[in-house]
Image 1 (cartoon, rainbow, N blue to C red):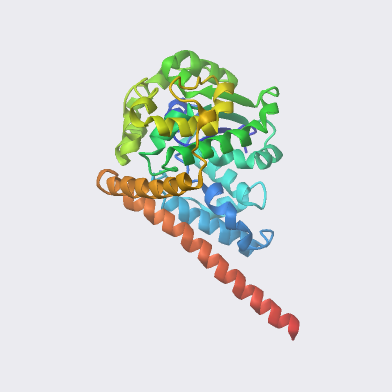
Image 2: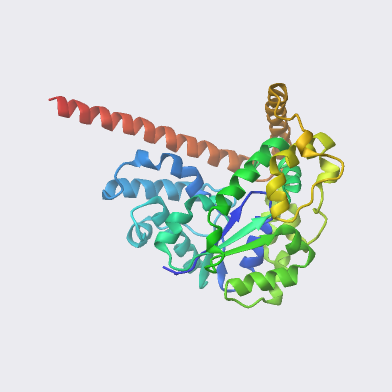
Length: 354
């Protein structure tokens, strides 16, 4: 097991796909598109029971393999369940996760692995308990642009106000680990800096990772993986092109004044902390967005935007059905384990009564 895995953390639609491919273009890194195992399985992993029991641990491993096999951005290997069982450094979901990424790393013959699942900020404690020198890249983007991007993507909340709430929640969770920066384990990278001066930004990042910047990294878009991933979804289309500043301040075109105001109302404090000036046209302290009628409108608008985006994805995304298949699979596994847990609990209760 490598001592220093790398984790890209933050909020979706902040450039994590771009950063993943920039790292993939380095010959030392294996960075698969994440099946988000920790995010999807953690809420009901307790239903698998005592993972110190081999049968229960193997059942969780089988579920992990099933999810990876049906991931909407397919992995280039068939997961070996016996190796996961043998190599997991702990009897936990995260232990399986580590063994899985190690298996992927060896498959590509790379020295290190990194994870693009931005939700891994929720598991920093587990990561620190298992790895002596992990590296966390806190990827930050202007929340107004995050909201503008999210409103056209299937991966996040759709109304700008709801996306801003999520952005603040996730940044605050990461801020609680800010002391890791002084320990050399946390690096903050703004999306805006990355696309405006990619060579300097990437050089600083690679220095944090104790690696050299290679010229080929900035040519990531020529790699077969970049071309393939860009072809799967409309929202990934720019990944087969050179780094561009075209998405900077896109909120000025994609959001109206009320939507911009709603984002700033929620995010103002953190925006200032990260160097994002508030708009001159709107004053968040005067916003009435929290009014109950406004919240009802936001929920309805969020639902309608989701329907619109999903309908568009049906026509433009090659992996539309794979994505929904995986989502249904997660719900199936959850229901299956709930039923099994109730059944086992009932049988144990009967035995106790007897």
